Length: 209
Figure 1: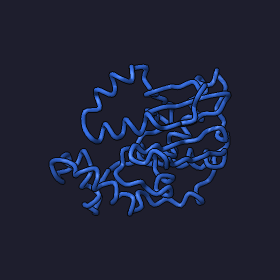
Figure 2: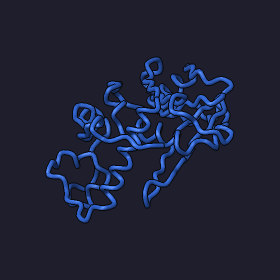
Figure 3: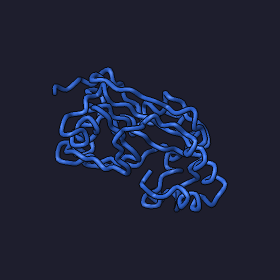
Figure 4: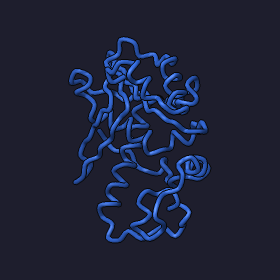
């Protein structure tokens, strides 16, 4: 994918998991023949007084059609409903619409031409695909601006009272809530079972573009 010889990458797959994932990837048809491919791509744009940045595993573009690929090594295939509500899904698609025009010959990438695909290394034949449209884009960008504004204007950042949310946080030691994060495999199942944020998207006003 990065232009490295496949045989060299095969030698680096030196654990059972890596070998299985690499074999699954080699046998997968991503459906992006003749697409321009942008790997390990970073995009950013201003949001208020701050910048929003995201790093993409792969963005494939052909004639204005843009497909975002994100590789996942989940041990359990997550539900599409959970994936659709994730910040990653919302930010990656909306940011590409705002800041990805230079990848498309200087022409904006319209939301209807954007698709996001989660490709699961252990479930190579069952990717999660999410299309996009202008209504979703306006809703997502409104939510992003709302949260950035709330964070910017906050005077205090009190610790959550629900300490179980801290168990898998990489930075928990800064809050004296443990020295290291728990196992990510345990976090996956727990995060999917809970609501990560409580927002009624239908009540957030749309913004004009």
